[in-house]
Length: 572
Ligand code: ADP
Image (cartoon, rainbow, N blue to C red; front, side):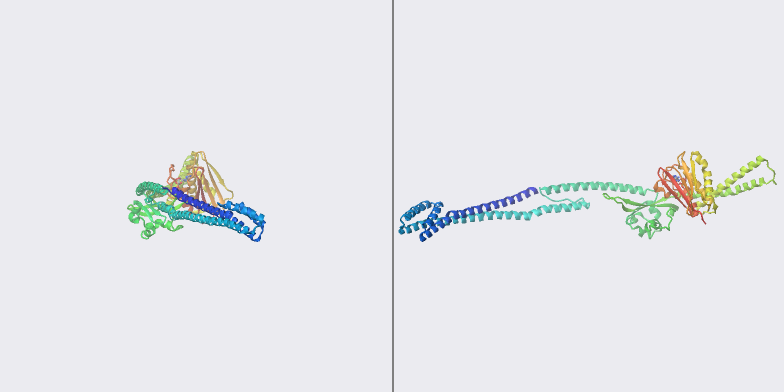
């Protein structure tokens, strides 16, 4: 039987019994009232009239007797009462006529007869009322007891009947919420709770099935990603939000010289205490504002049987949990990019350039000296044509000498041995030099320069050649990454004691996430298909910073980039 029917039956029966009790009580109260009314109206009044008649006989008041006799005549209720009253009337009329005192006892006797008749009736009717009261008592007590019994049964059984299955279901739902999908409800009844339990068990079974399927999928994905990370040629280390190691790939375990399995689950700080390299790797995480380490400088690590260079990248991992708005930090991934090959190529190139430019410098200088000797009239007089030829050889040799000088500059920057030659110089002259050096390149792409040199720019103390090299490089890049028939905006301005050079192009711009990295050595924006080495901007930075200046970039995808060089005019 279901709970609803149970409730309807129980409460319905209770209601029926309460109504029955009410009706029975009301009915018996009515019957009792009728009985007493009967006694009152029918017999009590007669007793009153007969008593008055007796009193009237004693006092001899005939009118009073007459009045009560008339009232009695209209209150006949008992069998034989009518005849007795008629006889009394007849004898009273004779008495009234003859006033014979001997008839008084007869009248009194007849009155007593009527009185006795009614007295008997009163005792009969009160017996009947007693009987009615007893029957009422019985029925009221019976229905009352039934009501109490049913109410008691409902009181004891109903709350637990409803609350117990809800409690069991509630507990099971909590278990499911705690991901205990094997939880089942055991309610063996054919009511609504039984149905609910059955459906709950079906749901739990499906959740269990789904969960195990999902887990298998997650495990598959996990092992696929683990394989991928393990096969990466770059060392990778993963940390959770409590800085415990969650994964270490083979390359990482090789360069750290530690067993990957023994590292997993360990607090990285504990391992770093025993491993210098790991300590350097997590330095940035441990001390957030650590200025003692140059984050951009490649790390020199002994790996693969030789000295290798790695660039470190630390990525914060943030996730947005289901149903939540804010992000949750869940750990770090440390990636080391092996740049040894670039480093080796670069130093080979630097050595080569340094050697070649050094070797070129002496013969070029001797060519210039020989040409100057040829110009000497003591050696011989030259005709105008020869003078022209000598002049052009001298200019070319001078250019060659300055190119070799520039090449030496680059090698100095690359090897970290920058030699500065700070002298007063006109900023506009430096910009002009850079414009002349890149003019042909700009013409080839039909690019125009829009030059804006503010008035009153004072001369400044700077390394003329190196600053010119930087501007040449920036303009050359601007041309490189600009569309044909576009404009490049070049400006010099002054702010406080600073001279500011700006090179602005209308090219494709640089994605925001790479803005900080483009000044790193060998860094090229992924997808750049122009020829290049990724060294130019790094050397620019070194040349400018060596002079105490600053170089920065502002860029927006689609609307070009602006490179800003700031040098203090009163340098050194
Ligand atoms: P290279 O030009 O030889 O690649 P650079 O150090 O000069 O090396 O530049 C580094 C990277 O910065 C380039 O590869 C290019 O992706 C980006 N870059 C430099 N200048 C610009 C520019 N004006 N517009 C867009 N990207 C630029």
